[in-house]
Each structure stands twice: as C-alpha cells, then as structure tokens.
Image (cartoon, rainbow, N blue to C red; front, side):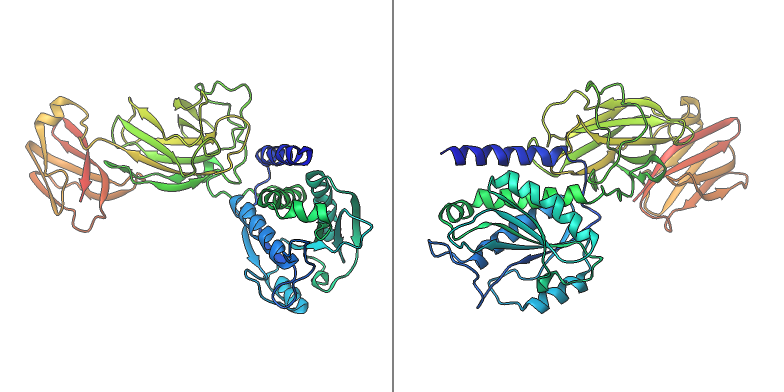
Length: 435
C-alpha cells in the first residue's frame, strides 16, 4: 500500500515537473529502441509476461510523451518482432537523432536489484545517462546501481549521437515484476526518461512567429476562418505584461500576429485545440505603433486566469481602417500548457466604412461585395481611384477624369481591399469585398 501511495505521488510530481520544465522538444528528433522482441523475448516475469512486451509498452508511453512535447520519434520496432542488434544500430545511425534511448529490463540473479543506465562512447552519451539515471531512481525508488560505460552493440553508434540503454529494474524479481506490470508505472518510467532528455537538451526556440518582427499575418473575414498556432517553443518577450494580466509575474512566452484593420471594429478569437486545465489559457493583447520597437497597448483580455481550454475573444472598437496592428498571444501564469496548440481568427462586420457622410452622399460605389466590375458614380468629376490590398500595396490606380468609372476586379483574388475615390472636394474611403 505504501508503494502504491508513493507511486501516485511520484506520478503527480512528474506531471507537475513536466509543466515547470521550460525546455520544449519541438525542434528535436528521437529514436526509441524497445529491447528484445519476437524470437528474443528477453527475461520472463513470474506471471509469464516477457520483457519484450513490457519494453514495447514503455516505448509507446515514451513516444507519446515526446510527441506531446512536439518532438518527432522513430521506433526500431513497433510490434513483437525480432530485430537484430546490428540492424538496430544501423537504424539509429541512419536516423541520426538528437538522442536515442534503448529500453530494457534487467534479469534477476536472486541477489541484487536496482536501476542502471549504460553508455558506450562520447561525452554526449555520458551526459545524457547522467541526466536520465537519477530521475529513474527517484521515480521507482530502487537501488541506484549507477551509470556504466559498457559498449553493447546497439550503443556502438556514431559517437556524436547521444545514445543510452536503461535497465529500469529487475523485472523478473517479484517486487519488480508487480511494479512494471502496472500501466501507470510504465507511464511514470517513460516520463522519467522524457524529463531526463529535457534536462539534457537545450530548449527549442523555433516558433516562426516567436518575435514581433516575424509576426504572422491574419486575414480578416466576415466568418471565423481559423489558422493553427502553437506556444510550443515560444520564448518570453521583453514587452511588459499587458494591463489586463493580473498575475504577479507571468511567463509571457508569447507569439505574434499582425493585421491591417479593414474597419473600426474587429474581433480576435483564440480557441485552444487541447481540452481542460492543461490546454492554453490565452491572454490576447493588441498593440499599435510604427514598428515593433514602439508598440503601444490598445486592448487586452484573458489576464484574470480561470481554466485552460476555454475560447477567448477580444472585441475591438475604435480602430483606424488601414492601420497595422500587432496581436500578442501567451498562456496565463508561469506553467507551460501541456497542450500548447490553439487556433486564431480575425473577424469583421460585412458593413463598409466611410470617411464622412458627405463623401458617402457625393460618391456611390456598387455592388459591394463585388464579383466582376465595381461601379463608381459621382455628380462631381472623379479624378482619382486607388485600390490597396491588406498589406497596403497599390493594386489599382486610375487618375483619368470622368463622372463614372468601372473597375475591373475579375483578376483580383477574393478578399478585402481598400478603395479611395477622389471626386471634386470629396474623398471617399471604403472597404470593398471581392467575392
């Protein structure tokens, strides 16, 4: 009973530690080698379960743990088949991973028990072994039999590849057999391996829109057209926390987007792709400014905590049509979300905007939305028509004087455009929706 209570506490602790550890694995590739298999069952537990099946179960648990942290993973075997040791070694070399873990369980000799980790050549492997071994010992509570330099065939890979073999416990010893046959314990052992890898490797920082200067564009629409995003691997920005964030010292590991306002009102919606408290609890902040070094907060939401996995919406008013705005997203608090993915969209009303009621009365633009030709009419001479895309680039100009114009929009891609019409003393600025 004491061991079960201890195991539960350790599993809970490992879950919490996985949140607190800031390293992300989204830039790494790993190989996991499930020991034995097929005609080579390894040692056998007193209940008849072979080592080859248990190492495969642990492999799946470790793979899922690493995938959840954003890594890519290759397996030397995914079924109960025999794979020669030399083939395993060649597979690891061909994959050239950032680290390789060979999972085994020791055979009991009637005297000793405990946990061992082996490495063969190269400082990287020795360092990885030293990071994994103590976490395995802490997880299971068995004797620390140490880190050992032994060149098993599967470890004689390229010395630049961190490659270790772990013997987590003596599984055919009665206590070890009972322990390792509990699925939750297999998951705990996998978590210990994963956390050892996290301790060994430097944090990833490969999120494309991690900085304001590399912000990703958002296209506005009358419906919510989600684009995928993630906080995995994001780093903390030097920007101060926004005014809505009530947390004392948030992590602020953020990503950035930008858009050009097409009207005075927009909505930004962030929907976590994970569920529950372990998903993204988004803080959404909007900024204006000439560039990323002169940002001024405009609006903010989501900074009062609550539960992760909840869709957040930032309702924006008083925006300047045509102006560029930056959107900043991060997770509330100091604990990284276990599920860092989210979806984001930018929405707007279908209505157009006008610079003045007088200009609206003096200049007529129709139809809007438009499929083919946009008609522009005015009692005054029209002496300038300019169309810009959402990036502020001119895609159409006409300065010929007339009282009626047709703008051929058949070649335009569907989306939102800014139209400026100069007619007499009036200047009309409006949004045009190309179908």
